Image 1 (cartoon, rainbow, N blue to C red):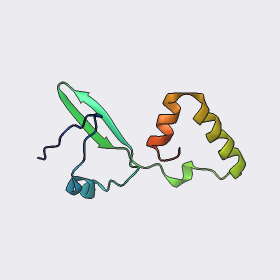
Image 2: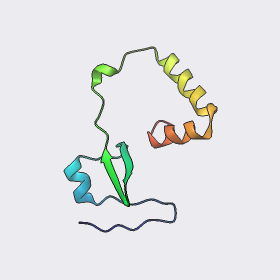
Image 3: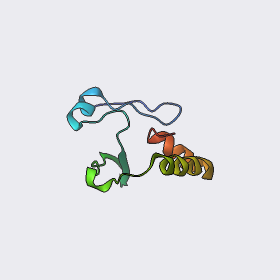
Image 4: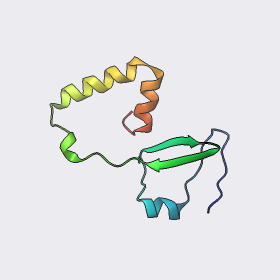
Length: 84
């Protein structure tokens, strides 16, 4: 068991040994859920490459630009995903 401290911004550091064992890297996506008074944090399985399709770069750039402008939540999500 590891102890971690919550920062003033509500952040925690996942210990290096845990990150290593779970294969977590910068940009890894995690889910957080409550089970009673417990918080469970689990890595999201990576999507298979077959899910992604090739498209023209211009279309992707326009879609990202529109998403960045749509709302603060979308902007934060893009930042969390390392896109924005």
